[in-house]
Length: 135
Image (tube, rainbow, N blue to C red; front, side, top):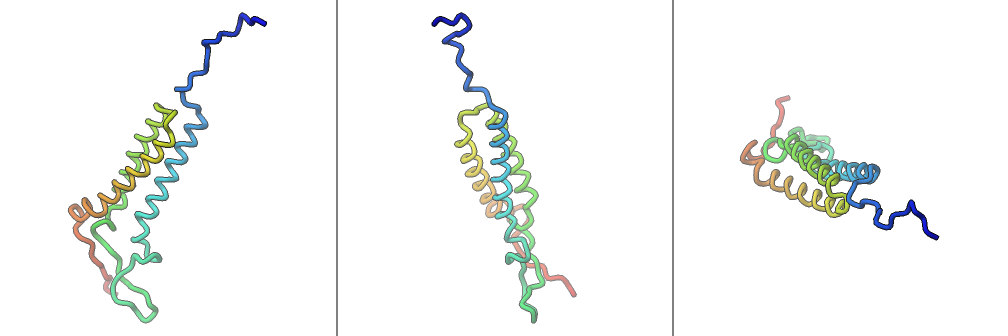
């Protein structure tokens, strides 16, 4: 039966972003950012081996690491924020490639923090060293 209201050329536009899909991509980007930042900051946590110096009678080490990658946490977080914003704009503009975008974001961010930890941080904050407080 012929329907005069039906237009066979009126197909949904697949290039526009669906709001829930975009929100899901932003949540995934934020999760990737948080996970990478956790592993970047893990060496500086005292409970995860971030302490240094001679062991005391309780097996604790009183010193903390400074310099190098240990001092660049804020820079790594800001770098992740810039990449997150760029990936968020790309997810909004190119909705059909979101999985590849998430993968590219993760790979680029991991590469960026590796370069930051080993290449840039020693030049900016000096080489890592142990600081033991005077007690």
